[in-house]
Length: 110
Length: 115
Image 1 (cartoon, chains in turn blue, brown):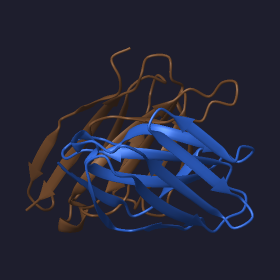
Image 2 (cartoon, rainbow over the protein chains, first blue to last red):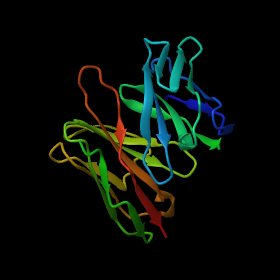
Image 3 (cartoon, helix red, strand yellow):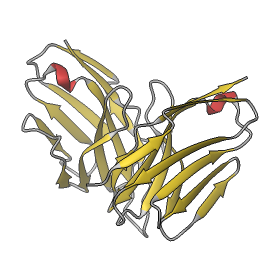
């Protein structure tokens, strides 16, 4: 089955700096890559996604890139704010069966 | 659109008891998913429904687990003879299978503690 690895497991940045989270996946059949933000005591919230026929997607301060050849995808958050502090999960999906990474705890220091 | 809701939000039970959780998906969504999340890990897929049909079950879903979606709307997840290893957050998500849509939207989860 699909295996998703995510790095780093924790990340601290100063407010205003950028944050980058990287993931790799194993199954070349995966065709959809969502990113979720999870705050304490809440369910995961979809923040951005990308499909396998697209290399990059941007939504305001958040961007995601996908390298299908290398099976890598990354999340970039620019101009970080304290409210960006949360756990972020990458995921890879085949036919709507979603496999999640182990999460990155992002702390934005004011 | 009120989002995905789950009930209860917290459940504490003694080992050996049965528990049942409910999920109400976003109203027009025809797919519903159950996931389990343990501390420090990402959600793990358990099962999913398209309308009332259960289309896939993970090997994580032992015989003590059963899920239903009788009318293609809300769903229930029952765990029989609970064990301490069942302690986790149980998450429900829903999506609309139409026009290549892939997005899954999660509820707040039910946190189960088995003592």
